[in-house]
Image (cartoon, rainbow, N blue to C red; front, side, top):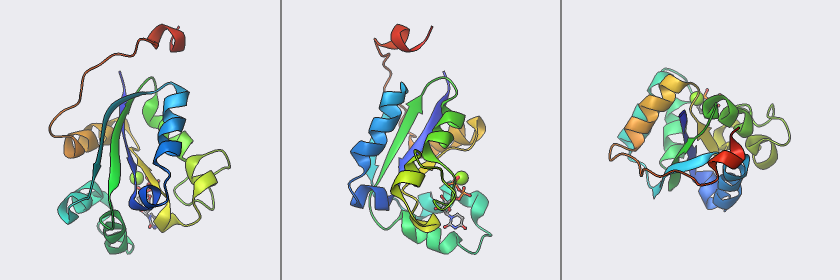
Length: 148
Ligand code: UDP
Ligand code: MG
């Protein structure tokens, strides 16, 4: 089944939003397939955001991601990449709808509390980058109550 890489950024961890954010994915019906708290090496942050390396905000973005621990996760479920992006909301919290994580919990684009993969291909790359050790295999017994 489809998987997405979701990361609670350092501001989300510092602000005590870990439980709130996990809860939204959990209550939706997605399955948690990987999770760890880690302080990010600069090279990992640069690699993760390599596509944005030419942007003027790139150095500040890397400093932000390495400024404190993050919670790196893999969530699984039908359409989790696209639906995860909807749960997260628009990149700039000024444009994120109320009800989304960024719309409810953030103000500025450079402190937008969470990352989510933007495509199935990005998700595959990001999961390999952040979880080289692999994931814990398990199946939720709730499956038939969530999927028809
Ligand atoms: N970002 C920023 N300034 C900008 C655009 C993006 O600081 O003008 C940061 C922001 O934290 C964003 C991250 O760079 O989440 C990655 O940008 P992307 O366009 O991939 O947005 P996302 O996929 O996170 O919505
Ligand atoms: Mg992105």
